[in-house]
Image (cartoon, rainbow, N blue to C red; front, top):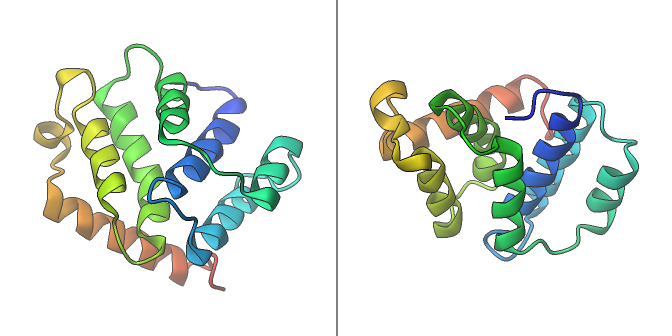
Length: 146
């Protein structure tokens, strides 16, 4: 996984791509993306600023490519779990988990033929609960709705 200053920029690009997985970036997702950009100090980054302002459509193959670049060739279970956690706030920000988003989470859980489920304890019900709890904490903590 990328461990330099560029990783926040790459993660935000992945979040933007994931917002497009269901075919439309919801208002809540846009708010969440802007909040993350602010929190990560990327609001004025030229590439991120342009992506947030124009919100150009990102195809799923591009999302997959960005995720692969971000995780690298041999991500650990922890790398995949961290990315799942990073994506969860966005995925649940509009109140629903689209099929495409659920498939992405499943692919990340099963990355490299390993399942994160055994070690980290994620299953569908626990994941939904984690997504909800993360969103509530973010909103209560001054997230995009504040």
